[in-house]
Image 1 (cartoon, rainbow, N blue to C red):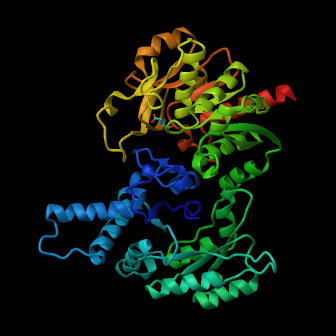
Image 2: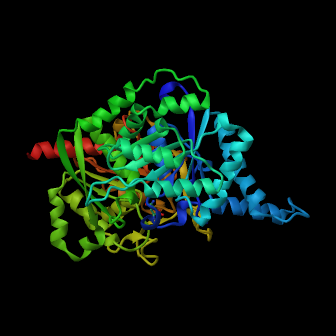
Image 3: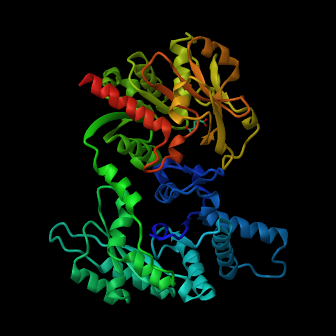
Length: 511
Ligand code: GLN
């Protein structure tokens, strides 16, 4: 709503947990770990922010309790607070405010949107709410705006929209000194007049400051439905910003492209965190972006690779898909199933895209089944493998700390001429984001390449393999990096666009 009126925003996500970042959490706990250009391992919401705003955020756009306390305690140990009793108020809250302001100043934007994660009333969220309460006093009423998002459930028996939880959470906020200026109800359907009136009355906001974020088919529609209800104009007026007529044409075009998908293809998503689709949310979105561009709906079929290990008929059922993806991951569980999925795609010439761990497993599969290197593996999986075709990065060898210590963030990749990936990107130098500790072992480069595995992208220094492909196949591509983190609606990531196009061609060739 700011952007289409000519203002530039940035967004901060506050996660009140004690982890310094999301990097050490299992996707089942917290969904995907998103990676920023500057190597932050962040909450997946930053991915949504980048996709909605088409801007690149920094690791500083994700603030956690862990970061705040770490900074304050380190300062205390240094002696920065000599003689003082260090307390949540003001020291912790000062550090929170400092970080919010720093992001605003560094990015030179007009508006900083701060999402305080969690639920009002959470013990761990309190210092953050206290900090934003203080910020209103310091920055002034006209320069700050509180938006409270509250769930309005619908009782399945009576169909009634219940406003009580919202009334309670607003009360809870007011108890700590925050009166929301706007209330957004998250509800399956648009709020009925009576529910809206109740929320306004009990929430102590004007009737026209209550909006509904109702369920829509395509998440990218959300800003449109809120602005249609007048939220954009309300915010501009309230912040004293000129309310120019918003130009939604480009965004509307993007949203329409998601709606106009008349064909349907099926992709097998092979991984080990498949019980929670949020584990791979940027990949899911990248496939959707690519599908929308081509007018095709991409059906994601989750396949737990551990099951492929025990069940060879399940491996054969991969023939039912128009494309096979092997997903990123860590550790031993499900690895042999991933290798089988790669093998099936390669031997049956089904469009294949492997990402990060999926890339590494494609190399292992090729080494085992084409080069004949029995028991070839990644040393992450089998430290004693006779053929460590994927091995730890040399600079990682002495690294003991687990947090923030992988090869992270944006790195340049040089694409070779006359390769699939070079044609997809349409240029020879690209930048993609990384998150890994292992890589293709240089000792096996010659053997792999001379047997037909094309190293179509290398790191800038030429020392690591970034993309592999197999020429004779209709589409066999794998990437050490995560191109999905740069995919945006209307601007799909080239490897994903190529993969979906190949899957569509394969589908149409068969039907
Ligand atoms: N576990 C692999 C590595 O550390 C791959 C990581 C990933 O898929 N993001 O290199």
